Length: 488
Image 1 (tube, rainbow, N blue to C red):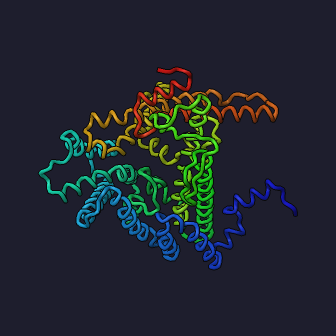
Image 2: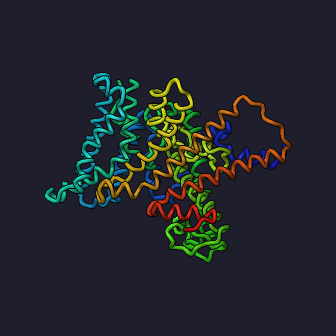
Image 3: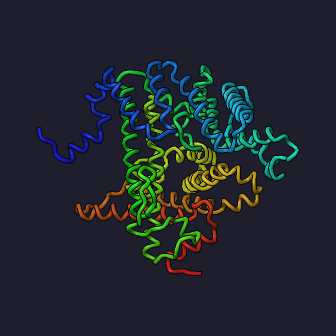
Protein backbone atom coordinates (compact mmCIF):
# COMPACT_ATOMS: atom_id res chain seq x y z
CA UNK A 1 0.00 0.00 0.00
CA UNK A 2 1.41 3.34 -1.10
CA UNK A 3 1.59 6.06 1.55
CA UNK A 4 0.81 9.69 0.90
CA UNK A 5 3.50 12.23 1.74
CA UNK A 6 1.56 13.27 4.85
CA UNK A 7 1.19 9.67 6.04
CA UNK A 8 4.88 9.01 5.42
CA UNK A 9 5.85 12.10 7.46
CA UNK A 10 3.61 10.98 10.32
CA UNK A 11 5.12 7.50 10.29
CA UNK A 12 8.66 8.87 10.41
CA UNK A 13 8.03 11.70 12.90
CA UNK A 14 6.04 9.48 15.26
CA UNK A 15 8.40 6.49 15.16
CA UNK A 16 8.54 6.50 18.97
CA UNK A 17 4.85 5.48 19.09
CA UNK A 18 5.10 2.70 16.50
CA UNK A 19 4.34 -0.63 18.30
CA UNK A 20 6.72 -2.56 16.06
CA UNK A 21 9.61 -0.17 16.76
CA UNK A 22 8.88 -0.22 20.51
CA UNK A 23 8.84 -4.02 20.45
CA UNK A 24 12.15 -4.13 18.55
CA UNK A 25 13.89 -1.73 20.97
CA UNK A 26 12.85 -3.94 23.89
CA UNK A 27 14.93 -6.79 22.41
CA UNK A 28 18.72 -7.04 23.09
CA UNK A 29 19.56 -6.30 19.44
CA UNK A 30 17.24 -3.30 19.31
CA UNK A 31 18.53 -1.99 22.60
CA UNK A 32 22.14 -2.17 21.43
CA UNK A 33 21.20 -0.28 18.27
CA UNK A 34 19.39 2.36 20.37
CA UNK A 35 22.44 3.02 22.55
CA UNK A 36 24.77 3.14 19.53
CA UNK A 37 22.60 5.90 18.04
CA UNK A 38 22.46 7.73 21.39
CA UNK A 39 26.24 7.51 21.66
CA UNK A 40 26.63 9.08 18.21
CA UNK A 41 24.11 11.85 18.91
CA UNK A 42 25.64 12.81 22.26
CA UNK A 43 29.27 12.50 21.17
CA UNK A 44 29.21 16.05 19.84
CA UNK A 45 27.85 17.50 23.09
CA UNK A 46 30.50 16.93 25.73
CA UNK A 47 28.25 18.11 28.59
CA UNK A 48 25.88 15.20 27.87
CA UNK A 49 28.26 12.54 26.56
CA UNK A 50 29.25 11.23 30.05
CA UNK A 51 25.58 10.43 30.70
CA UNK A 52 25.59 7.46 28.32
CA UNK A 53 27.28 4.99 30.74
CA UNK A 54 24.97 6.20 33.52
CA UNK A 55 21.96 5.53 31.28
CA UNK A 56 23.19 2.04 30.40
CA UNK A 57 23.90 1.21 34.06
CA UNK A 58 20.45 2.49 34.99
CA UNK A 59 18.89 0.15 32.44
CA UNK A 60 20.96 -2.85 33.53
CA UNK A 61 20.22 -2.18 37.22
CA UNK A 62 16.88 -0.33 37.29
CA UNK A 63 16.52 -0.69 41.06
CA UNK A 64 19.78 1.29 41.46
CA UNK A 65 18.82 3.98 38.96
CA UNK A 66 18.57 6.84 41.44
CA UNK A 67 21.91 5.83 42.99
CA UNK A 68 23.67 6.05 39.61
CA UNK A 69 21.92 9.32 38.77
CA UNK A 70 22.74 10.81 42.18
CA UNK A 71 26.43 9.89 41.98
CA UNK A 72 26.57 11.16 38.41
CA UNK A 73 24.83 14.37 39.48
CA UNK A 74 27.30 15.05 42.28
CA UNK A 75 30.24 14.58 39.91
CA UNK A 76 28.83 16.32 36.82
CA UNK A 77 27.03 19.24 38.47
CA UNK A 78 29.83 20.15 40.85
CA UNK A 79 32.40 19.42 38.15
CA UNK A 80 30.75 21.83 35.72
CA UNK A 81 29.17 24.47 37.97
CA UNK A 82 31.90 25.18 40.50
CA UNK A 83 34.66 25.86 37.92
CA UNK A 84 32.28 28.34 36.25
CA UNK A 85 32.07 30.15 39.58
CA UNK A 86 35.86 30.47 39.70
CA UNK A 87 36.46 27.61 42.13
CA UNK A 88 39.80 26.10 41.15
CA UNK A 89 41.36 25.42 44.56
CA UNK A 90 40.87 21.69 45.46
CA UNK A 91 40.25 22.48 49.14
CA UNK A 92 37.60 25.11 48.32
CA UNK A 93 36.03 22.73 45.78
CA UNK A 94 35.71 19.90 48.33
CA UNK A 95 34.57 22.24 51.10
CA UNK A 96 31.89 23.81 48.89
CA UNK A 97 30.63 20.41 47.73
CA UNK A 98 30.52 19.15 51.33
CA UNK A 99 28.59 22.21 52.58
CA UNK A 100 26.06 22.00 49.74
CA UNK A 101 25.52 18.27 50.23
CA UNK A 102 25.04 18.84 53.96
CA UNK A 103 22.54 21.62 53.22
CA UNK A 104 20.55 19.39 50.85
CA UNK A 105 20.58 16.60 53.44
CA UNK A 106 19.37 19.02 56.14
CA UNK A 107 16.40 20.07 53.99
CA UNK A 108 15.73 16.39 53.24
CA UNK A 109 15.60 15.61 56.97
CA UNK A 110 13.34 18.62 57.56
CA UNK A 111 10.99 17.46 54.79
CA UNK A 112 11.01 13.91 56.16
CA UNK A 113 10.01 15.21 59.61
CA UNK A 114 7.55 17.73 58.16
CA UNK A 115 4.63 16.71 60.37
CA UNK A 116 6.56 17.60 63.53
CA UNK A 117 7.06 21.27 62.60
CA UNK A 118 4.91 24.22 63.73
CA UNK A 119 1.68 24.91 61.82
CA UNK A 120 2.99 28.13 60.25
CA UNK A 121 6.00 26.28 58.78
CA UNK A 122 3.79 23.47 57.47
CA UNK A 123 1.44 25.98 55.87
CA UNK A 124 4.15 28.14 54.31
CA UNK A 125 7.19 25.88 53.72
CA UNK A 126 8.48 27.86 50.73
CA UNK A 127 8.26 31.22 52.50
CA UNK A 128 10.04 29.68 55.48
CA UNK A 129 12.86 28.36 53.27
CA UNK A 130 13.36 31.69 51.49
CA UNK A 131 13.17 33.70 54.72
CA UNK A 132 15.84 31.41 56.15
CA UNK A 133 18.09 32.03 53.15
CA UNK A 134 17.56 35.79 53.06
CA UNK A 135 18.17 36.12 56.79
CA UNK A 136 21.71 34.98 55.99
CA UNK A 137 22.08 36.73 52.63
CA UNK A 138 20.81 40.22 53.45
CA UNK A 139 23.43 41.06 56.11
CA UNK A 140 26.18 39.98 53.69
CA UNK A 141 24.68 42.05 50.86
CA UNK A 142 24.03 45.17 52.93
CA UNK A 143 27.53 45.10 54.38
CA UNK A 144 29.05 44.95 50.90
CA UNK A 145 30.02 41.32 50.84
CA UNK A 146 32.04 39.04 53.04
CA UNK A 147 34.56 40.93 55.25
CA UNK A 148 38.20 40.85 54.13
CA UNK A 149 39.17 39.61 57.58
CA UNK A 150 37.68 36.22 56.73
CA UNK A 151 40.35 33.73 55.52
CA UNK A 152 40.60 33.56 51.73
CA UNK A 153 39.65 29.86 51.45
CA UNK A 154 36.62 30.30 53.73
CA UNK A 155 35.54 33.44 51.87
CA UNK A 156 35.78 31.60 48.54
CA UNK A 157 33.76 28.69 49.94
CA UNK A 158 30.99 30.94 51.31
CA UNK A 159 30.81 32.85 48.02
CA UNK A 160 30.59 29.62 45.96
CA UNK A 161 27.85 28.26 48.23
CA UNK A 162 25.82 31.47 47.86
CA UNK A 163 26.22 31.47 44.08
CA UNK A 164 24.99 27.86 43.93
CA UNK A 165 21.81 28.68 45.85
CA UNK A 166 19.82 29.78 42.75
CA UNK A 167 20.49 26.33 41.29
CA UNK A 168 19.30 24.56 44.45
CA UNK A 169 16.57 26.64 46.03
CA UNK A 170 13.68 25.70 43.70
CA UNK A 171 14.65 22.04 43.68
CA UNK A 172 14.70 22.09 47.47
CA UNK A 173 11.27 23.73 47.28
CA UNK A 174 9.96 20.66 45.44
CA UNK A 175 11.62 18.51 48.10
CA UNK A 176 9.71 20.39 50.81
CA UNK A 177 6.48 19.89 48.88
CA UNK A 178 7.13 16.13 48.95
CA UNK A 179 7.39 16.42 52.73
CA UNK A 180 4.20 18.48 52.88
CA UNK A 181 2.31 15.90 50.79
CA UNK A 182 3.56 13.03 52.97
CA UNK A 183 5.38 11.13 50.22
CA UNK A 184 8.74 11.03 52.01
CA UNK A 185 8.04 8.53 54.75
CA UNK A 186 9.99 5.69 53.14
CA UNK A 187 12.10 7.87 50.88
CA UNK A 188 15.88 7.63 50.66
CA UNK A 189 18.20 10.58 50.35
CA UNK A 190 19.43 9.48 46.94
CA UNK A 191 15.82 9.37 45.66
CA UNK A 192 15.80 13.15 46.04
CA UNK A 193 19.45 14.01 45.53
CA UNK A 194 19.27 13.02 41.86
CA UNK A 195 16.92 15.86 40.95
CA UNK A 196 18.52 18.36 43.34
CA UNK A 197 21.82 17.79 41.54
CA UNK A 198 20.60 16.65 38.11
CA UNK A 199 23.15 14.75 36.08
CA UNK A 200 20.88 15.23 33.05
CA UNK A 201 21.55 18.96 33.10
CA UNK A 202 19.30 21.97 32.75
CA UNK A 203 19.20 25.48 34.17
CA UNK A 204 18.27 26.88 37.56
CA UNK A 205 14.74 25.80 36.63
CA UNK A 206 14.12 22.17 37.73
CA UNK A 207 13.45 20.34 34.47
CA UNK A 208 11.16 17.46 35.40
CA UNK A 209 9.97 19.34 38.52
CA UNK A 210 10.28 17.27 41.68
CA UNK A 211 10.08 13.74 43.04
CA UNK A 212 6.31 13.26 42.78
CA UNK A 213 6.07 14.23 39.10
CA UNK A 214 9.17 12.23 38.18
CA UNK A 215 7.87 9.14 39.98
CA UNK A 216 4.56 9.39 38.14
CA UNK A 217 6.44 9.32 34.81
CA UNK A 218 8.98 6.61 35.67
CA UNK A 219 9.28 3.48 33.55
CA UNK A 220 11.29 0.60 35.03
CA UNK A 221 11.37 -2.01 32.28
CA UNK A 222 9.60 -3.57 29.34
CA UNK A 223 7.68 -1.73 26.66
CA UNK A 224 7.09 1.37 28.79
CA UNK A 225 10.83 1.87 29.18
CA UNK A 226 11.39 1.33 25.44
CA UNK A 227 8.65 3.85 24.67
CA UNK A 228 10.27 6.41 26.99
CA UNK A 229 13.72 5.84 25.47
CA UNK A 230 12.42 6.19 21.92
CA UNK A 231 10.68 9.43 22.93
CA UNK A 232 14.03 10.60 24.30
CA UNK A 233 15.79 9.57 21.09
CA UNK A 234 13.29 11.61 19.09
CA UNK A 235 14.12 14.71 21.16
CA UNK A 236 17.84 14.20 20.54
CA UNK A 237 17.14 14.04 16.79
CA UNK A 238 15.04 17.21 17.06
CA UNK A 239 17.77 18.92 19.08
CA UNK A 240 20.27 18.24 16.30
CA UNK A 241 17.77 19.38 13.69
CA UNK A 242 17.39 22.71 15.52
CA UNK A 243 21.16 22.96 16.09
CA UNK A 244 21.71 22.71 12.34
CA UNK A 245 18.79 25.06 11.64
CA UNK A 246 20.19 27.63 14.07
CA UNK A 247 23.62 27.24 12.48
CA UNK A 248 22.16 28.14 9.10
CA UNK A 249 19.98 30.80 10.73
CA UNK A 250 22.95 32.57 12.33
CA UNK A 251 25.00 32.39 9.15
CA UNK A 252 22.16 33.53 6.92
CA UNK A 253 20.76 36.38 9.00
CA UNK A 254 23.77 37.53 11.02
CA UNK A 255 26.82 36.29 9.11
CA UNK A 256 28.14 34.73 12.32
CA UNK A 257 30.56 31.81 12.36
CA UNK A 258 28.76 28.57 13.17
CA UNK A 259 29.68 26.45 16.18
CA UNK A 260 29.66 23.28 14.08
CA UNK A 261 31.43 24.39 10.92
CA UNK A 262 33.22 27.57 11.96
CA UNK A 263 32.25 29.03 8.59
CA UNK A 264 31.64 32.76 8.48
CA UNK A 265 30.44 34.85 5.58
CA UNK A 266 28.71 38.11 4.79
CA UNK A 267 25.12 38.01 5.98
CA UNK A 268 22.54 37.87 3.23
CA UNK A 269 20.31 40.21 5.24
CA UNK A 270 22.70 42.26 7.37
CA UNK A 271 20.63 41.90 10.53
CA UNK A 272 21.87 42.73 14.02
CA UNK A 273 21.16 41.22 17.41
CA UNK A 274 18.52 42.99 19.47
CA UNK A 275 21.03 43.78 22.22
CA UNK A 276 23.32 45.48 19.67
CA UNK A 277 20.49 47.71 18.45
CA UNK A 278 19.46 48.69 21.97
CA UNK A 279 22.99 49.44 23.19
CA UNK A 280 23.84 51.43 20.05
CA UNK A 281 26.79 49.21 19.11
CA UNK A 282 25.12 48.58 15.73
CA UNK A 283 24.25 51.23 13.13
CA UNK A 284 20.76 52.70 13.44
CA UNK A 285 18.54 50.57 11.17
CA UNK A 286 15.60 51.61 9.05
CA UNK A 287 12.19 51.00 10.59
CA UNK A 288 11.42 47.84 8.56
CA UNK A 289 14.90 46.51 9.36
CA UNK A 290 14.43 47.21 13.09
CA UNK A 291 11.16 45.27 13.14
CA UNK A 292 12.76 42.42 11.18
CA UNK A 293 15.67 42.26 13.67
CA UNK A 294 13.17 42.23 16.53
CA UNK A 295 11.17 39.28 15.19
CA UNK A 296 14.19 37.28 14.01
CA UNK A 297 15.87 37.68 17.40
CA UNK A 298 12.77 36.25 19.10
CA UNK A 299 12.76 33.23 16.78
CA UNK A 300 16.50 32.68 17.37
CA UNK A 301 16.00 32.83 21.15
CA UNK A 302 13.17 30.28 20.90
CA UNK A 303 15.36 27.90 18.89
CA UNK A 304 18.14 28.23 21.47
CA UNK A 305 15.82 27.31 24.33
CA UNK A 306 14.29 24.44 22.34
CA UNK A 307 17.76 22.92 21.75
CA UNK A 308 18.61 23.02 25.46
CA UNK A 309 15.23 21.65 26.51
CA UNK A 310 15.26 18.83 23.96
CA UNK A 311 18.72 17.70 25.05
CA UNK A 312 17.88 17.75 28.76
CA UNK A 313 14.43 16.16 28.49
CA UNK A 314 15.74 13.71 25.88
CA UNK A 315 18.37 12.50 28.36
CA UNK A 316 15.82 12.33 31.17
CA UNK A 317 13.55 10.18 28.99
CA UNK A 318 16.47 7.91 28.16
CA UNK A 319 16.90 7.41 31.90
CA UNK A 320 13.31 6.14 31.90
CA UNK A 321 11.36 9.23 32.99
CA UNK A 322 8.89 9.95 30.19
CA UNK A 323 8.23 13.56 31.18
CA UNK A 324 6.68 16.38 29.17
CA UNK A 325 8.77 18.51 26.81
CA UNK A 326 10.15 21.84 27.99
CA UNK A 327 9.47 23.61 24.67
CA UNK A 328 6.64 22.47 22.41
CA UNK A 329 5.97 24.43 19.20
CA UNK A 330 5.59 27.86 20.85
CA UNK A 331 5.93 29.66 17.51
CA UNK A 332 2.59 28.13 16.48
CA UNK A 333 0.76 29.40 19.57
CA UNK A 334 -2.35 31.47 18.81
CA UNK A 335 -2.60 33.25 22.17
CA UNK A 336 -0.23 34.79 24.70
CA UNK A 337 -1.13 32.32 27.43
CA UNK A 338 -0.68 29.41 25.00
CA UNK A 339 2.80 30.67 24.06
CA UNK A 340 3.69 31.02 27.76
CA UNK A 341 2.63 27.40 28.35
CA UNK A 342 4.62 26.09 25.40
CA UNK A 343 7.79 28.21 25.46
CA UNK A 344 9.39 27.27 28.80
CA UNK A 345 7.05 24.70 30.33
CA UNK A 346 9.01 23.91 33.50
CA UNK A 347 9.62 27.57 34.31
CA UNK A 348 5.89 28.19 33.90
CA UNK A 349 5.18 25.20 36.16
CA UNK A 350 7.59 26.55 38.78
CA UNK A 351 5.82 29.91 38.81
CA UNK A 352 2.40 28.27 38.94
CA UNK A 353 3.25 25.92 41.81
CA UNK A 354 5.26 28.34 43.95
CA UNK A 355 3.38 31.60 43.28
CA UNK A 356 0.08 31.18 41.41
CA UNK A 357 -1.58 28.49 43.54
CA UNK A 358 -0.57 29.92 46.96
CA UNK A 359 -2.23 33.24 46.03
CA UNK A 360 -5.17 31.68 44.18
CA UNK A 361 -6.02 29.37 47.11
CA UNK A 362 -5.63 32.04 49.80
CA UNK A 363 -7.00 35.38 48.56
CA UNK A 364 -10.09 36.99 46.99
CA UNK A 365 -12.17 33.80 47.01
CA UNK A 366 -15.40 35.75 46.58
CA UNK A 367 -14.05 37.92 43.77
CA UNK A 368 -13.14 35.55 40.90
CA UNK A 369 -11.80 38.19 38.50
CA UNK A 370 -9.59 39.81 41.12
CA UNK A 371 -8.54 36.35 42.28
CA UNK A 372 -7.29 35.37 38.83
CA UNK A 373 -5.64 38.75 38.29
CA UNK A 374 -3.78 38.57 41.63
CA UNK A 375 -2.69 34.96 41.12
CA UNK A 376 -1.44 35.51 37.55
CA UNK A 377 0.44 38.68 38.51
CA UNK A 378 1.92 36.87 41.52
CA UNK A 379 3.31 34.25 39.16
CA UNK A 380 4.12 35.97 35.86
CA UNK A 381 5.16 39.30 37.42
CA UNK A 382 6.24 39.00 41.08
CA UNK A 383 7.43 35.38 41.01
CA UNK A 384 9.09 35.81 37.64
CA UNK A 385 11.00 38.89 38.82
CA UNK A 386 11.93 37.26 42.13
CA UNK A 387 13.27 34.18 40.34
CA UNK A 388 15.54 36.35 38.20
CA UNK A 389 16.60 38.44 41.19
CA UNK A 390 17.70 35.19 42.85
CA UNK A 391 19.73 34.38 39.74
CA UNK A 392 21.68 37.61 40.24
CA UNK A 393 23.01 36.90 43.74
CA UNK A 394 26.54 37.47 42.43
CA UNK A 395 25.49 40.94 41.29
CA UNK A 396 24.02 41.69 44.72
CA UNK A 397 27.25 40.56 46.40
CA UNK A 398 29.38 42.75 44.11
CA UNK A 399 27.25 45.90 43.91
CA UNK A 400 25.05 45.89 46.99
CA UNK A 401 21.26 45.79 47.09
CA UNK A 402 20.34 49.19 45.59
CA UNK A 403 22.79 49.18 42.66
CA UNK A 404 22.05 45.55 41.81
CA UNK A 405 18.31 46.20 41.88
CA UNK A 406 18.84 49.12 39.49
CA UNK A 407 20.66 46.78 37.12
CA UNK A 408 17.76 44.31 36.98
CA UNK A 409 14.79 46.71 37.06
CA UNK A 410 14.28 46.32 33.31
CA UNK A 411 13.35 42.69 33.86
CA UNK A 412 10.78 43.80 36.42
CA UNK A 413 9.10 45.92 33.74
CA UNK A 414 9.26 42.99 31.29
CA UNK A 415 7.65 40.69 33.88
CA UNK A 416 4.93 43.28 34.57
CA UNK A 417 4.04 43.53 30.87
CA UNK A 418 4.11 39.74 30.56
CA UNK A 419 1.76 39.38 33.53
CA UNK A 420 -0.71 41.87 32.05
CA UNK A 421 -0.53 40.10 28.68
CA UNK A 422 -1.24 36.69 30.25
CA UNK A 423 -4.17 38.11 32.30
CA UNK A 424 -5.75 39.70 29.23
CA UNK A 425 -5.18 36.56 27.14
CA UNK A 426 -6.75 34.33 29.81
CA UNK A 427 -9.73 36.70 30.11
CA UNK A 428 -10.31 36.66 26.36
CA UNK A 429 -10.12 32.87 26.22
CA UNK A 430 -12.56 32.59 29.13
CA UNK A 431 -14.98 35.00 27.42
CA UNK A 432 -14.95 32.82 24.28
CA UNK A 433 -15.77 29.59 26.12
CA UNK A 434 -19.24 28.27 25.43
CA UNK A 435 -19.82 30.64 22.53
CA UNK A 436 -20.65 29.31 19.09
CA UNK A 437 -17.79 30.19 16.80
CA UNK A 438 -18.71 31.61 13.39
CA UNK A 439 -18.14 29.34 10.42
CA UNK A 440 -15.45 30.46 7.97
CA UNK A 441 -14.05 29.19 4.72
CA UNK A 442 -10.79 27.24 4.84
CA UNK A 443 -8.89 30.26 3.56
CA UNK A 444 -10.43 32.62 6.11
CA UNK A 445 -9.79 30.17 8.97
CA UNK A 446 -6.14 29.92 7.95
CA UNK A 447 -5.90 33.70 7.72
CA UNK A 448 -7.38 34.14 11.22
CA UNK A 449 -4.90 31.59 12.62
CA UNK A 450 -1.95 33.32 10.93
CA UNK A 451 -3.14 36.69 12.25
CA UNK A 452 -3.34 35.33 15.80
CA UNK A 453 0.14 33.80 15.56
CA UNK A 454 1.52 37.08 14.22
CA UNK A 455 -0.04 38.94 17.16
CA UNK A 456 1.65 36.59 19.61
CA UNK A 457 5.01 37.03 17.87
CA UNK A 458 4.70 40.81 17.98
CA UNK A 459 3.73 40.88 21.65
CA UNK A 460 6.61 38.68 22.82
CA UNK A 461 9.09 40.37 20.51
CA UNK A 462 8.17 43.76 21.95
CA UNK A 463 8.23 42.79 25.64
CA UNK A 464 11.58 41.04 25.13
CA UNK A 465 13.10 44.48 24.56
CA UNK A 466 13.22 44.81 28.36
CA UNK A 467 14.68 41.31 28.75
CA UNK A 468 18.17 41.99 27.45
CA UNK A 469 20.85 41.56 30.17
CA UNK A 470 23.48 44.27 30.15
CA UNK A 471 21.35 46.99 28.54
CA UNK A 472 19.88 50.06 30.26
CA UNK A 473 16.18 50.68 30.85
CA UNK A 474 16.18 54.06 29.12
CA UNK A 475 17.99 52.66 26.07
CA UNK A 476 15.47 49.81 25.88
CA UNK A 477 12.54 52.22 26.17
CA UNK A 478 14.07 54.55 23.57
CA UNK A 479 14.42 51.66 21.12
CA UNK A 480 10.82 50.56 21.77
CA UNK A 481 9.48 54.03 21.04
CA UNK A 482 11.61 54.33 17.91
CA UNK A 483 9.68 51.37 16.46
CA UNK A 484 6.65 53.68 16.36
CA UNK A 485 8.45 56.76 14.96
CA UNK A 486 8.83 58.31 18.43
CA UNK A 487 12.40 59.57 18.70
CA UNK A 488 13.93 61.36 21.68
